[in-house]
Length: 418
Image 1 (cartoon, one colour):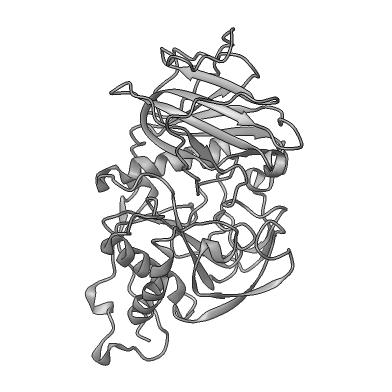
Image 2 (spheres, helix red, strand yellow):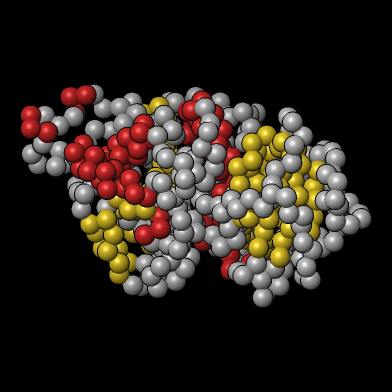
């Protein structure tokens, strides 16, 4: 996930021809932000099990005020529409939000309109590890099979908020149908009887004398907080699992959410991203295979088995035979904490080691999308631990995290005993 948080503080919204402006407040509107008259009813958030989150969708109608006084507070938002991701190409989406505690309005932030995380188009032919049989992925949300296509901007983490103003300037194609703002409440987490963690392998699994192993180079598994551990609402995802081939590369991302958070709040951020990926983007599950917080804690992402090659939706064009690991935070200028880097190195070393892939090595992959840096069908060489920007035109994983990848590779290879 990525946003482009270019704050435009002090600048009033400029209403141009073909600009769709809407102000949504709970319950008041800042002076000068009113965009027109009328208040169509908001679509309520979709309730789930106790502790589950919700997404409230509010239509963005040109020149009209949208008021959702009964809507829940939200902590993450984005703008969605019906149609392909490119429908807003060349356009802009700006948002500002009101702090639910202080009532203070933020500056304007511009959201990324052309998605860079996401599933590759079309039905994938995959191999189910349990049987070895080739099957066609029935990922109705990921592939759009059986569902009208829907798209959304990258999400913005706002923290507890109760008001939002949105300004959409369409691109050359004009405004797409179904334009709406999506307000995400991550909830308090669904309680589950499942194990909350996958324990780390004992320290004896660390490299022995000389720091090397003979034979298979398998790094020790780090402790992994399971989906039950972060309170995932399993009722909203697709019930089946889709697998890819052996994992040969790990793509490192940042979530572009807040960097200054208590580690105890990381599950809340993950739940918000999960809700947005599934309910707003229409994906089958959260896009990332793993996430790592600032304290180095590793979290299970997409369901299907941490030790299995679960097909993710993280690096457009290169989701096949790869895994996506997202650092929770925004690391454009903020330096990633050492513990976070250690956590990323540990999960990368373990995941690549399951297929004996050298974490310091390289691999050749074939693009599955023209939306990536490489046309569909084109081969490209990647380091086994690569950044999202190596495959897509994006700043992800941030200018402060990307230069750390060489040392991540070195540490991951050390953990593999190489």
